[in-house]
Length: 153
Image 1: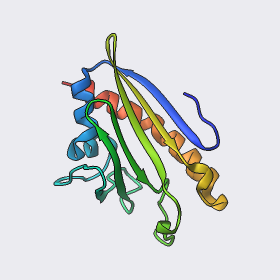
Image 2: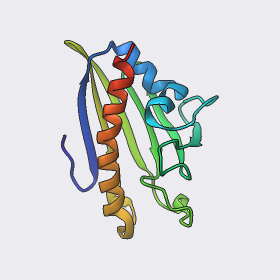
Image 3: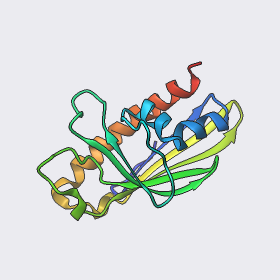
């Protein structure tokens, strides 16, 4: 689990078929179930915005709000968002977003998932460290969430 000041990287072997993991990532409603966002009726498509309320306790006032960057079936799903955008008094639209990439590879015993969030060095210094720290911990939890989601029958 490597990181630097600009990027967070998490890797995990998921004991699930590639097609199952891809579905959990690329289908917005499924993504919302494991991620903790109400994305009912939403879809993911390159160049499109997807938005829904976060359902994680304590963060119900926050929106999952992304612009899908790329979708390469069963290989790569990526989006841009504003990291740790939790203060309703701040207009995060004025900040550059980070890029979140989910890369998949078939592996012995399942699917290798690589998650990278990059671009933290472009976040305003006043909140850069907090956004990095919170998202780093957040991705630890989300890796466990998708693992449970794709391996539970």
